[in-house]
Length: 277
Image 1 (cartoon, rainbow, N blue to C red):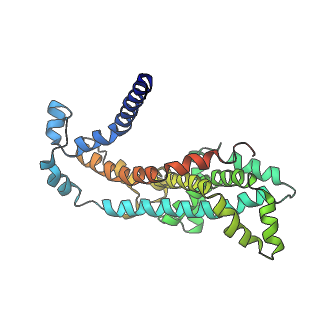
Image 2 (cartoon, rainbow, N blue to C red; image 1 turned 90 degrees about the horizontal axis):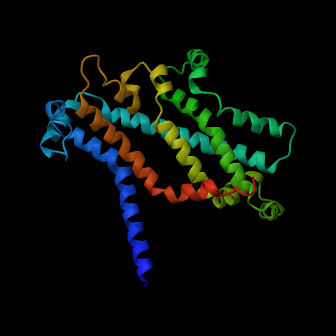
C-alpha cells in the first residue's frame, strides 16, 4: 500500500469521525442536560459529561407525567401513517404507472400540488371536517391527516420504481392467469422493496414528528404524542430543562435507531427509477 493511499485513508477516517461527532452532538447535549443539576445549569452553565447521580431525580420529575403513553401515541400515529401511505400509495403508484386513462396527468398533478399547500392553510376547514366526522380527540384522525400529506410522496416513489420494471415480467404472470392484485403483491412489490422502504421512512417520520394537527385536534392530555408533550413543559416562569431534554432523548432515540437500521435502503430506494420516470 502506497503512502498516498495511507494518507487518503487516514483523512477519510478523520472526516468520518468529524461527521459522527457533529451528528451525535445533539444526543450528547441532551444527555448532559438531562443528567445534571438544573441549579448548576443556570449557575455555571452546561456540564461536560452526564452525571449519573441525577438519574433518580430525573425519573422522579417525570414520574407523574404520562411520558410512556405519549411515546405509544407517537408510535401509533407514525405506524398508522406508514401503513396507510404504503397501502394506498402502492395501489395509486401502480395505477399511474401501468394503466392509461383519461385524467391520468391531472391526477398526478393534483397529487403533486398537495405538497405545495402548507398544513396550516387547511387547519380550519380540516377542524370543521373532524368535528362533523367525530374525529376530534381521536388518534385515527391524526393518522388520516398525516397520511394525506405523505401519501402523494409514497405514490410518486412507488410509481418511479415501477416504471423501471419491464412490463414483460407482469405479462408472463397474467398469461398464467395470475390476477392483477397478485401481480402487484407477489411480483411487483418484492422487486421495489428498497423504494417501499424509502417511502416508509418518509411516512414514518412525517407521523413521528407530528405536532400541528395534534396540538389542534387533541384536547385530552393522555392522547398527546410526545412532540406536544414536550411543548407542554414550557412554562411562563420556568422550564424544567432536565425533564425537557430527558423526554427529548427518549423521543429521539427510537427514530435515530430506525433510520440507522434501514439507511441503505433509503438511498437505493430514492435513486431507483430516477432515470426513467
